[in-house]
Amino acid sequence: MASFDKPVDYKEGTVIFSEGEPSSYMYIVVSGEIRIFKEDKDRLIPISIAKSKNFIGELSIFSDEPRSVSAIAVSPSTVIMLKKSDIRKVIKECPDWVSNIMVTLSDRLRGSIDMLREHRIVDDITNAGDELDSKAEKKFHKLIQDYRKRRGLKK
Image (tube, one colour):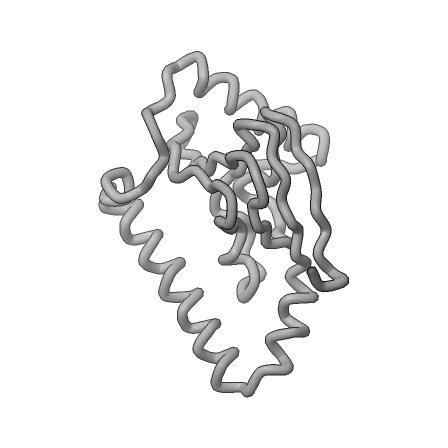
């Protein structure tokens, strides 16, 4: 691990980040499960489940846009937090053409994800597990709202 890696343990039900908040980190899942949600008005749409060796928050590396999804630990989880600024420093050491390719790929990925969501195709290709029942959706929605309130965030 590099000096800027920060392993962090999250309890089940902990919001790691919420849609709309500024992004400063990318996360690599060491253990556990992190569920990713997209908010659609008053609904939560399950997007995916990140498990060991998966990463989340990667679109924030090259963009200063706010988070496009929310992430919640659905089991006790350990992640490695990588600061966006530290990742950018490492990328600056690469030739310009490498970082240009990475930025272009990130932009294309974000555009593809947006298009898939817009056309409702994303539900067919993600591994989000079963749809949420109303009780689970309310629970996750409340966790996100409480997180935002504690952090002084608005959505």
